Length: 153
Image (tube, rainbow, N blue to C red; front, side, top):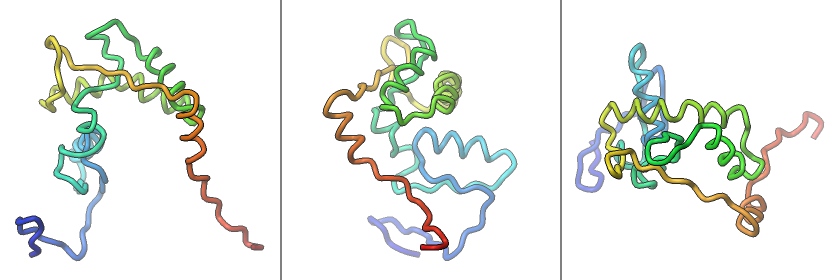
């Protein structure tokens, strides 16, 4: 037993599980919940479950094409995502995210996740697209992909 911030915490020397989900924001909790039907799941995060990650940082708003506050469609979200990805977004994966996003957000809403609301609708936001110097600086600061050393080297 360890005392951490005034709370006694049990620290295990070894854990065994079928699924380990790292991150307890909206995506992590959703994935963990989907895995629990047939498997043992451990959800690990550096913060309290449901109190960390990008979902909370976005103040429980969503950047998904729900079409509730204003007319929208997942294909418009895809175009925005690809533009914001500054050529680093994979079209196929972005399409899956954008097309399936509204269904997943509504599914989590059914779990009483507590999305921010405006006029009775889940509050939607649009992430800014990086252009000009901001995009250049972001691209310049990205780490290069790790390449495994060759057998000769």
